[in-house]
Image 1 (cartoon, rainbow, N blue to C red):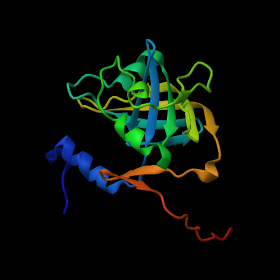
Image 2: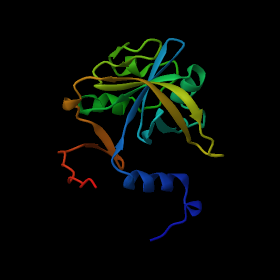
Image 3: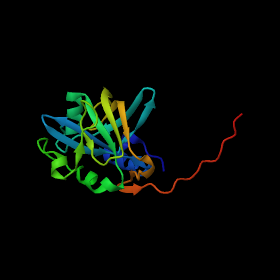
Length: 190
């Protein structure tokens, strides 16, 4: 079946992409504003470049059409910390996707422990084994839409015992644990 995207609703397109671009890593983004720590997961996220070190995240709007707190905080403060999600943090990450008032911290609401490791950046989730301190590079204007891609420069990288990392990804609407690694065939060098 061939479908023309102009004839599909944004929701229909979202489900087509979410069901077929798999697995998708989850950026658990920590931002701050006026003493409130916001933590929210985004699965339309991927590395963009190693030189410069950048990632891209697509951030939607709140149910009322206003910018999500994550986007508003990044635009205002130009900084965030992205934590990669592993099996240990799955439940709290899932709860942190709920839409809360901007004056309520997901860290406090869902008892997510934080630690400050990057100077002048939001804290990271305490037991996250991978985190990136990021600054705003640019917003990408896609016209009249409820989502906006944002390019972030990775300024610092934190890793701890990545051999034990058990990452969680989105596969469609479900979460998935990544299974056993499979060795790639050796390519001949000519």
